Length: 160
Image (cartoon, rainbow, N blue to C red; front, side):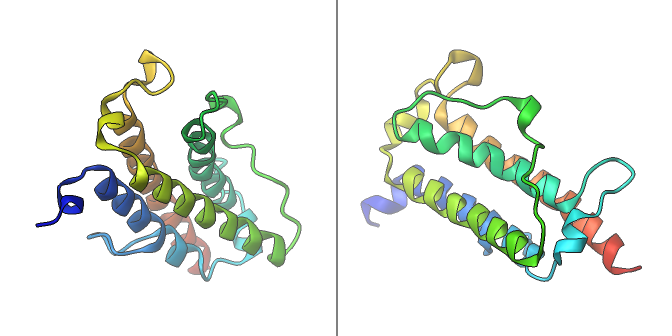
């Protein structure tokens, strides 16, 4: 076995990629789920106040918040803003938004992959957030959770 198979960070990066672009054991991922969602469907609000665009933005919010931290900047994320999606005005803006979500997830995966495993056990910006390992897995779990909501909303919208 080579050294890469014994490292944890590349495994976390792979798991992150899988929830965003496929290959996980659930066979559900964000890219494929959103591929045939129209802008109108993405913007349609459900009675609980969630829409596909709102949930997609919420997933992306935390990915985007971690990227600067891995570049040595302070964490600048606030839960109260995590559903404040951009105003998308047409199909093209929706597709660009989805692509930016996927691009940022890949960038995060690449950054995680390159980290030494020792950093995984270090405090992530503040002790109240736990370590890097916990935060990376939290993003993956959080994405799976909201991906399931997106799948349910999509099924409902496409069955009408």
